[in-house]
Structures are given as structure tokens and as C-alpha cells.
Image (cartoon, rainbow, N blue to C red):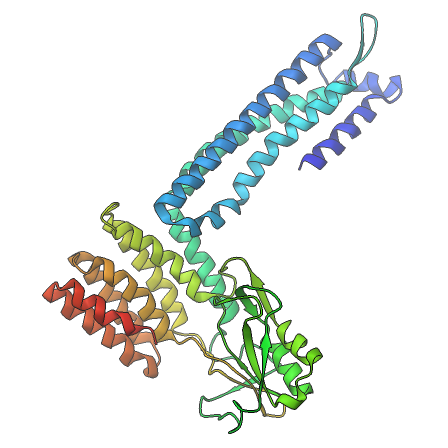
Length: 410
């Protein structure tokens, strides 16, 4: 935006410098400025814009601090990527840069001077637009820290992750490979005749290109077992996968397999559905802590979790066995299950809110709805946790429920 402001300032100053006949027509539609008044107007606008930009930046930092302490540090990503905040700050800085450049073009005094009339007039328009932007920013910043707004944005991101990662109506995630049931066995000598594929650098696994893994494995007649999941942390030179047989895994092939994994310094919601749900769970846990004691926020979190999990229940979950076009086993990985997502989310909330009758009632209701929509293979695990929470709530024995829900993640 600042570069656009620089280009606009140069363009308008050049337009003002055209021959007198053109300027005479322009003067009929613009205010007439002397050099002193033009400098005063531009200086006032530039000074006020940099001041307002500083105030805007301070308010943004205060909002980030509040969001981090109230909702968890994982929320900072959403606020820093907020397009509205970026546009507001960019508008103020662009107006400041524009006025500085136009101010430098005002020359002379007395009867011999040059005043870019169009440029100064446009600077006044920018000042009015910046004032409107400031009003928008005050409303936007107040709305963005409301818990309802935050949870809605998290739910939208989670739904995008679901659409991106989990295909709809049983379709496979990609046309380039097929899946097979978990019964597809690895070669009997897999562990003794395989080579480890190590990471070139450490970090969190942000995405795994299964298409590429299948292609490399098929080209070299390999079977690859992925050692971790998206969202797992892998240290430098840590194992990413194991490829069989050892004799066909050259250094070049190992590098190709390693390139199918992308890393970053943090977990992201783009392909990590567990992290997408975890952010909402973290808000619920903080709301139920003794220092905050806000069970209503936890109820909102349960509603949003139930919404996303309800969508997930109708989606196709991978089997963990991937075949190539010739129907040969090429990639094996540990798949996430619907029951695992449900239990990991609700067990974490139950450990903090087991003594709240309203919360437990809503939690059990959401779990029942998830169970009705869940595949038959996941229904038993979900209802097992459901019954554990119900019994623990009736007995109001927090320690027993904590121990019972610990192994719920499968």
C-alpha cells in the first residue's frame, strides 16, 4: 500500500506539472492553494496520520496481549493475519507517505511557485478516508476480541481443514492413489531390511504429500511406512519414514522421500485437524480454570466442536494403507480416527469441567449426537467415554474421571 501511495503521489504531481491549458481546466474543479497553505495542510495530515498509526499499532498490540492471556497464545496467529488490521495500518502509513512526497514537491513563494493542486486535493480526500478507516478500526477491534467472533473464525478454519483433508461421501483424497483396508500386511522382513528416511531439518510436520510418496515408492518398487503424523515434532535428523527394501533406497531416493514432508516452527491448521480442534479445546480449558471461571464460554466451545465433528462424521477417513495404480501397497501410516478426535477433545474438557452440571449435560448431549453420526467402528469408543463421564459426574469424583479419561486417546 505504501508503494501504491508513492506511485500515486508521483503521478498526481506529474499531472499537476502539465501545460497551463490543462491546469486551467483543473483549477475550475479544485481549490486554489498557495504554497504556504498547501504546506500547512499536507504537514497537518502527515503529522496526524503518523500519530494515528502509532495509536493503532498500540491498540493492536494491546489486543494481542489480551487475546494471548485470555484465549491462549495459539490465537495470536489469527489476529496477526487479520486482513482488517493490516488494511487499517496500511491506509494510515500510505496517507503519511503520500503527503510527505507531495509536500516535497511544493516549491517557491510569492509570485513564483508551484503547488500540485490535484495532489493536495487528493491528500485531503485520503485524510477523510483515513478518518472513516479509524472509525471502522475501533469497531473491528472491539468485535474481533469477542469470544463468539473468535470461535466462529476457528470453526470456519476447521471446516476448511475438513474440506481440504477429508474427502466427502467416501471419495478418495486423490485420484492418483487408492486405499486398502488395514488388513493389508507389510512384508514379513520389513523391519530387518528397511532404511530410515531422516529429516533434513527439525520442526513440526505441517503437511505430507502422499501423492509424491506413492510416486517415488512406485518408481523404485518400495514400501514406505510413515513414522509420524501431521502436527508431530521431528528433531533435526529425526526419522520421518522407513523404506523397504534397503537395497533400493539410495541417498537420492531417500532425499526424494524426505522432500514429501514440509516442516515449520509451529503447528498450523491447514492440514492438521487435531490442531484445529485443539485451539477451541484450549479456550474451553482456560474458561474452566479457577482463575477465569467462565463456563458459558466453555458451552460455546462445545457447540462449535459439535458442529465441526458433525461434519467430520460424514467424511471418509483414510485406512492408513495406500496403493499405487497397479494395486500394490506403497505407503503405510497411522491414520487418525473419528473416535480419536472426539475423545481427545471432550476428555480434555471433561477433566476441567466435571463438576459443572450444565457443562456435563451439554457435553454428553454433543457426544451422543457425534456417536449417532459416527461409523460403527468408532461408536463404541465414543460411548465408552460418554458413560465414563456420566458416571464420574454423578459421583462427582474428579480424580477417578481424570484417570479414566487419560487413555481415551487411541
